Image (spheres, helix red, strand yellow):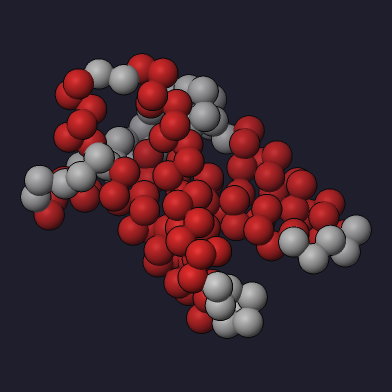
Length: 125
């Protein structure tokens, strides 16, 4: 499993690309930071299984720590489950069809969650 900083950096990259594509929608720095932070949201389930050795999984001690455990297959568990990005994607589609102007935020939540699960190597079943 990648460390938390890896997920945050991936969020900054994805939201940065979206900000370049839609500069008027993502011009608020607070929204940018919150959206990048969404990429770490599934890691809240680690608090339920916290162990002192997990402190090393927050900040890197070397450059290569950013890539440790990336894409290593593991079974779904609590928030590390594909049902969540699927639900948020469906909610974004429904919000878009009903012309709710905040549908993009739900879509970004779905993208953030799915990206996190991909980096962690979470399997479908």
